Image (tube, rainbow, N blue to C red; front, side):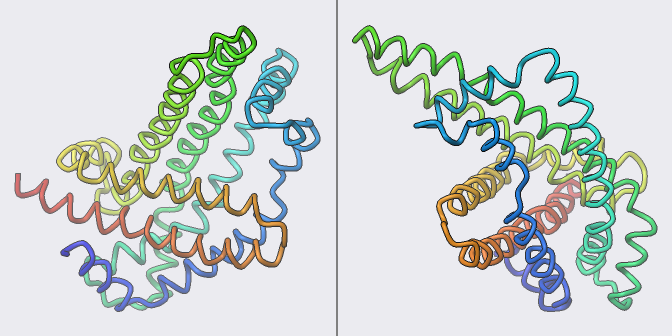
Length: 278
């Protein structure tokens, strides 16, 4: 109840927080309609396969070659850097506004936002850069991780020796491991951002110490957020109408980013109180 009460007070005191999230979600939903990754996969022929297993095998064959890797890795690093700079510029003011709302600041909203961009742009950009690199590594890891279980499953089916382990459990286990890797990565970075604002010195190190006091308590909500994000992406892929996809994405992303902001900043503030008491 304390978490919900604190979050409600923040958004009630600064309604611009919700306006900011809705505006950001609106822009992201427009960009999502022109998702270059989906077009790239279509050009590779991956989405034209009969099922996702064929897609994973096809992508792994096309991706893991020396000529491709020598192009993909520098391009991915450059993309991560550009996205990090843009993300830091767009979100540092918002994060500072949420932080100062938690600390009962009475300064004007515009002043807080510009102060956040001026003081925290570089730090948030660095954390975003680390986050994007980690996510790119996971994306590159997924085809490589799924192919062995896919091959074993297909061989078992071809030899008419399919049992529960090879045809079911192994595939599910692989997907669960991938999900947990994503969830642990999200958990690692989600609370680094508020730590930047709460601590001026060694924020990343202190973030780890603070989160350790309530890791299991907040890991479940983080898993739920990851599930909602993946579910939203899958839902949008099934919608045929661009207009419907846009409005559905806008609503879902607004709700999702509101929840992410609350878990990140309100959650961190509550963990910090417990950390200081200990």
